[in-house]
Length: 269
Image (tube, rainbow, N blue to C red; front, top):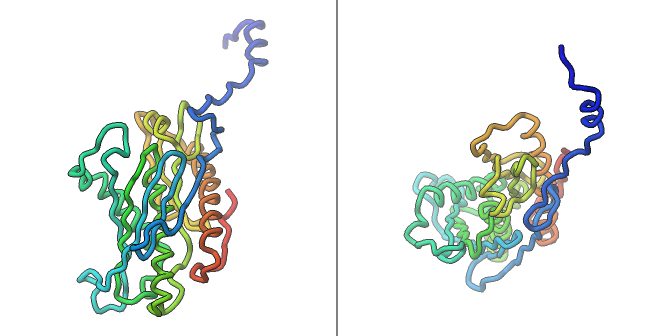
C-alpha cells in the first residue's frame, strides 16, 4: 500500500480542526434564539398568548365551545383542536389569505392539535371543545414550534377559565408539551433554526416532547442529502436542550395555577 510522503503526513497530523461556521445571528450551534411568551394578551378569549422565538411571533388564542364533534358526543369527553394560518405580511411577500387552507396549514394545525391532546385529559372538562387558533404575526423560521409553545399557555389559561366557572372535574393536564427545531447546516447540527438556516439546511427536523422528556412527534427530512444514526442522535441531544428551556419557561409562567402535574425534569441526553 502506498503512503503520502512524510512531509504531507506531518502537515495532516497537525492541521487544526475546522471551526463551526458562524450562524447568521452570531449564535453558537447549541444556542437557541431569545424566547418570550406573553400571557393573557386578548381580553375576549378564554386563553391567549404570544410566543416569540427570535423574530418569529405567533398569536395563540383558545376558545371554549359547549359542544364536541359528533363522533365523541355522549361519551363524556371533550376535544382539543387547532387552526393555523399566517397573516398576509408575516413573510417577505404578501401571502394571500386564500392560501391559508392549503396542505401545509392543515398539516401544521393537525400537528398542534395532536401535541396538545397528547398531554391533556379529555375527560376532565366535560363535553366541550377547545379551539386553539395559531396566527403567525411574523415568520422567521420555526412557526409551528412557536405555535405549539404558545398554544400550551393559551390552553392552560382556557382551563383556568373553566376552573373558575366550576367546570373542571380534575386536573386537565397529564404533562406539559414543548417544541423546537433542529437541523444540520453546512454540516453542523444546530438548534432552533431561523429562516436563513432553515431554507438552506441539509437536514431539517421539528421535535415535540413532553415536560417529562417523552417524544410526542418527530418531523425530519434530509434536503437532498441523507443523515446517519449519529446525526440523528446529535440532533435529538440538541432538541432536548431547547425543550428543557421551553419547559422551564412554561413552569415559570404556569406552575402556580395548580393545573399542572408535579414537575418532572426531562431525562438527560
